Length: 424
Ligand code: EPU
Image 1 (cartoon, rainbow, N blue to C red):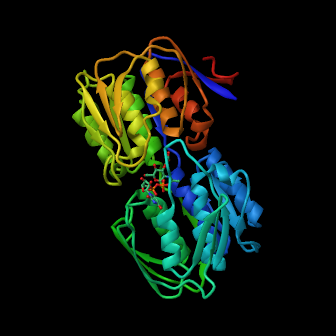
Image 2: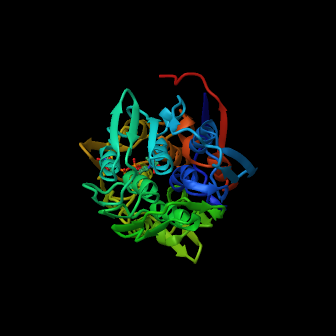
Image 3: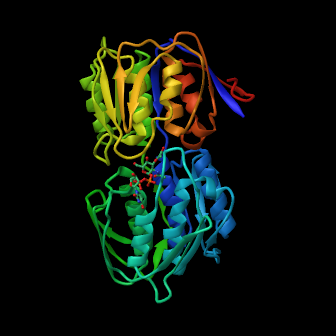
């Protein structure tokens, strides 16, 4: 076990380059299973979740070779099994993309899946309903999904009852190799949905409309692959550093980003009186003076991302005036108790947090309850007076590439050390 020791109160200054998108990578790496030839994927983030996906691909028989720290070559030609079953995959939500990818390739799949999760219930009923609409028979039992399209996958019309990133991507994967045309309506429009579609098209699939709420897929008998593809920058990593810059009253430029993907956050920070300067592929975030409180509601893209909710809540406690944050996607306020130990005053009622502003953070012992909660606690620790010990950083390692190194590069006093049990 490891923890971060952070001595707060230092403004972050300087430039960092944002890594590739975690959630795009979790879709793109399994998508290579649909291809006839090896693919080279660039800008892959160096995170724990990616290591688990690569181990799973290897266990299936794919040859995975790291060409450098962030570039991997995946050769899917030797994959003979439709079964992705392992203990490590069952700790990773994104493992559900193996269902769509293996179903597309073999017409059947067996995949072990995680049970509970720190964000509350995480159903995949809409994924399974979609697979069945494509002609598969699917059962979910004993921690496994088993699906089989005995007569082959057939294109069809699918209306998703809710906007879901996972089901949109999973159905694109399977339908890419179905016979005939598929139309998926009420799709998620997140940048990583578009990136997975772009990757599939570059490999030879035929997908139109990704980024809108209607996606049309012309099924292909064969998807050639044999391409080199670079993953888009991570919208949430960029957002996390933007909020960290504001919280520490710093001046930070994020490079290698797509400013359009940050719009909902940029607008909120501007509303709070945080300085923002934008270029084609960078955003600079700087301290302008006192921050105002603001109200935030998380929604599917292009709304404010749920994966930035803990971080913005940590920031709003420091602003003048009170704020209200409503969570529209998950049950994810578990971290609030930790933030309160650092000095926040927040009342949670259901999926709404009422935040008293003008608080000052003071360093103490806290523990991460999930990935983005961990990022929020680090932000609070950076803005704190004194020393903080942030435990359970395995969550942060799942999704942020070189988090503390990038923070240290910006001047943060942050150290990774071995840790015993959480002290209280
Ligand atoms: N939902 C259903 N049925 C389904 C699928 C989803 O009811 O079959 C509901 C969920 O309960 C939730 C909503 O639909 O209320 C949205 O879920 P979605 O499917 O969009 O989430 P996901 O695909 O499981 C991805 C990211 C999450 C991110 C959400 C929302 C990956 C691997 N994970 O999850 O990322 O919070 O989209 O944007 O892409 C993170 O990176 O920290 C993270 C949790």
